[in-house]
Length: 307
Length: 254
Image (cartoon, rainbow over all chains, first blue to last red; front, top):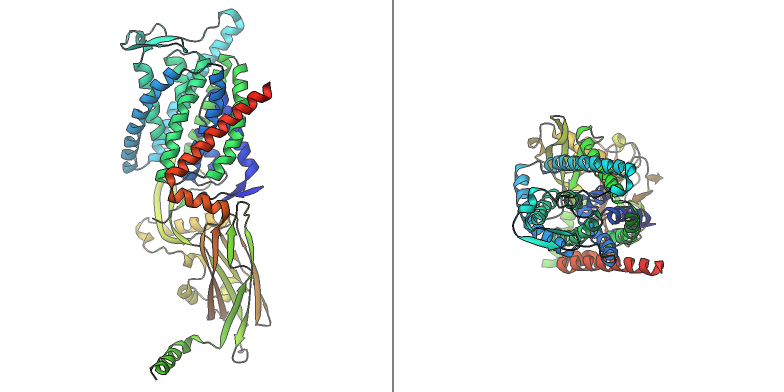
C-alpha cells in the first residue's frame, strides 16, 4: 500500500515503514539505545530527503523510548535521579555542541568530521565492550556462581566531592562523573546528530559501574528528553518533521519496543552487552567502509527550497 | 474612435502571432490532487492543428509536448578521493532546474528539433536547466550537469520519450505522460510545439495545477504556519502511542 508523505513529498510503501519502525523499536527496547543511528540511514535508503529523515527519525525514537520506558518504570529499573543529573549535563553539552558544529560548518567538511569521529568513537567503544563481555561470558561458563557485573568501585572517582546517593543504581558517588558524561553525550549528540544512547549505555556500565538492568531504563529516560528537544528544534527551524511518516514509524516502533524490552529482560547482562557491542561494531564498520570504498555514484544532488 | 484605433493596433501587434497553423490542445486533467494514497498519475495529452491554409508541402509535421514541474535551485556535490577517503570535494549550484521534466516527441530528437530552435525555446532538458555561471564554480562544471540529468532520470523525474506522440494525418495528435508518485506541489507547465524540418512553426502553453488536498494539505499547512504547535502535536502522538502500546501489551499478558 503506497502512501504519499506530505512533508517529504515522496510516495512510499506503508508496510515497509511499519517494518522499519518495528525493527528499530525492537533494538531500542532491547538495548536502551535510541536507534536514530539506524533509522536515519534506513529512511535515506528508501528515498526520504535527509532533513526529513533526521527530524522524523527523532520523533520515532521518542515514541519507542516512551514505550520501552513504561515497562522499565513498572519493573522499577529506572534511576530517575541519575537520569536527571545526566540530562542537566546533557543540555549544557548540547549547546556547546551546536556552537562547535557551527564552527566546523564554517570550516567546511562537517560530514567528514561527523563520520570520522563516529567511526573512531564507536569502533573503540564497541571493541572494548566486546572484549569485556566476551571475557565475562567465558568466566560465567567456567564458574557460573561467580559472575559479577564490572564495577568501578575502587577507582579515583570514589574520592571526588559532592557525593550523592543513587539508590536504584546502588551507587554512592560524586555527581561530577554522571554530569560530565551528560555534557559529553549532549555535546556529541548535537554535533554528530546521534541520540547518544550508544555512548551513554557503555559509559553507565563501565565508567559509573551501574547495574546493566538499570542502565537500559535510565538511558531510555534521558533519550526521550534529548530527542524531544531535537524534534522541536527541527520542527521550528526547518519544518522537516513529517507527521504521516512519523505515525507509521511510531506504530511499528512502539510494538517493536515492547517485544524488544521483553527479550532484553530474558537476556543475561553479559549477553546483552556482547550483542550491543556487535551492533556498535557493525554500524561503525559500515560507516568506515562507506568512507573508504569508492561510491557507485560520486555525485549527490540536493534541491534547495525556496528561500 | 479611440477604441477602434486601439483595436486595430492590437490586431496589428497580434498579427504575427496568428500563424498559418495553430494548436488546439487539451489535457485529460488540468488539476491533480495529491491525496494520501496518491501513486502517480497518467495524463492524456491530445490536440489538433487548426489551419487557415492547406497543409504546406515538404517534411511532415512533427509534435513535441513537454511538461515541466516547478523549478528550484539545486546543489550538486561530487566526492573525491582524499588521503584514502571519499569525501565531498566540489559543489556546484545551479540557479534553476525543473523538479520534473517530461518530453514526448513524434520522432527522433534530431529530426523533430533543430539546435537553434532548441536554444531559442529551451525545449530539451539540458536547455531547461538554467546553468548560467557554473563554469566559474568548477573546472569541469559540465560533468555536474550530466550527473544531475543522470540522477533525475534514474529517479524517474526527467523523462525523454522520442516517438511517443502519435500524429494522425498531420492534424490530430495524442500522447500519454506518466507523472510519478514523488511529485512536488506547484504549477506544471505544459508546452506544445509544432515543428517542420526542425523549426518551430507554432506553440501553445497551458498549466496543470498539482496540489495536496485533505489531510495532506492540512498537515503541510500546519507544519509551515504553526511549527511549534505542529512539533508539540508530533511529540504528543509519539508519547501517547508509546504509552498505549505499553498498556496494551500489559493487558495482553494478563
